[in-house]
Image 1 (cartoon, rainbow, N blue to C red):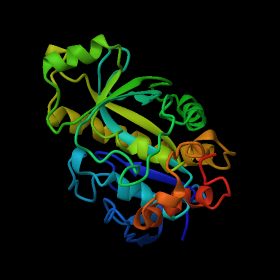
Image 2 (image 1 turned 90 degrees about the horizontal axis):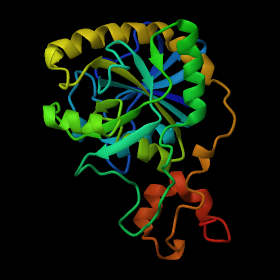
Image 3 (image 1 turned 120 degrees about the vertical axis):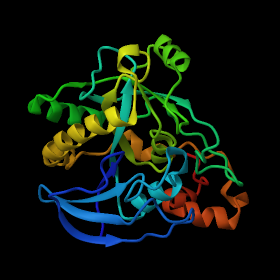
Image 4 (image 1 turned 120 degrees about the horizontal axis):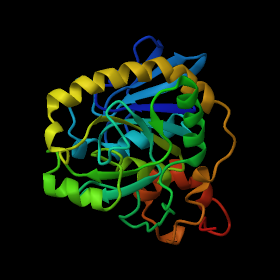
Length: 292
């Protein structure tokens, strides 16, 4: 079974209630097992593969999510687009709890997470100036507007390590950067999707004002309550989102590694070539060595 569109569920979204289940598959990868089995479901007449980022029952901390395995597994079943959902805190009055944000900027404050498929004998550098697919963002924006759900078509997401929430000093620092959101899961997921030549967009669902608003300091109770409301709104509009993304044409995201690989294929270790052939095999088969 294959699917061109994947949905990655964040905190609070561990299954797609109401979608017709077509089957589940455990997909071993060169980086171990993904967060959970891949669930193939029918939404709006389309086959979509669903993966809960934190696993059923929320087993993985943000830094523990096996992102390399997740993206590889999705690529292996034909996925060309990933619509990812993420619970986030707001760093601005503009983005209120309950709002959805179609992020267009990303700041990496993580550390120690395996963040690339490159290394171990292969050097590569993908362009990442625009970390989220513009075509997917535009399609999703049309749905949110039609649904009249409070939303914003742009916003910079600061991805922190966690698992604790920000200190007040950190929150004020992030606000001084003119960032809109704070979360823990967009990276390395977005970067790995780009390296795998998959279109990727995040719908960030605001749950709180982080801790810069002293009268509304973030707590697990506040986050969970707003997250439940956000998830209910998301489920109602998911068929429209799937429909809007159906049939999108070619996209630069799907050729992101065409000029990225610097290493001569002749010297790439055999085991590295084997585990990355799913992504880069067509480039290596070219007479020019795959770097152009």
